[in-house]
Length: 126
Figure 1 (cartoon, rainbow, N blue to C red):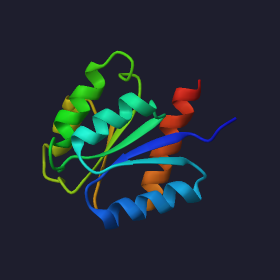
Figure 2 (tube, helix red, strand yellow; figure 1 turned 45 degrees about the vertical axis):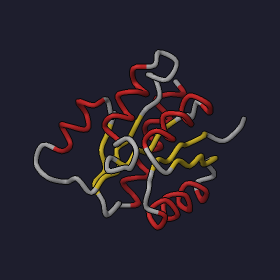
Figure 3 (cartoon, helix red, strand yellow; figure 1 turned 30 degrees about the vertical axis):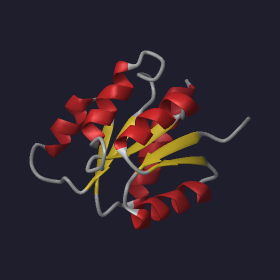
């Protein structure tokens, strides 16, 4: 069986590298996008098993990108976890309303990230 494929949509190279390293250590295949539009395009091309979506992105923000992905019937089933510095009251709800399945605030708690990824991948395997 091939390893789960995770798309990370993150414009900050340091954050992208950190999360990519974690995912590779967990033996996942990593697909990277640096802005919201590229994230939408890569989701459509690659059909990943899970998407980690920054919300503050150039070109197209993460809320808009999430709505576009969830509006596509071929992609709507893919879990999207928001990774964001938007940690104010209401930001979690705003992310969930946009279609994110879950939300992790930055700085990222690595154990929380790993647990949520495994949770959503085990759900999709059933």
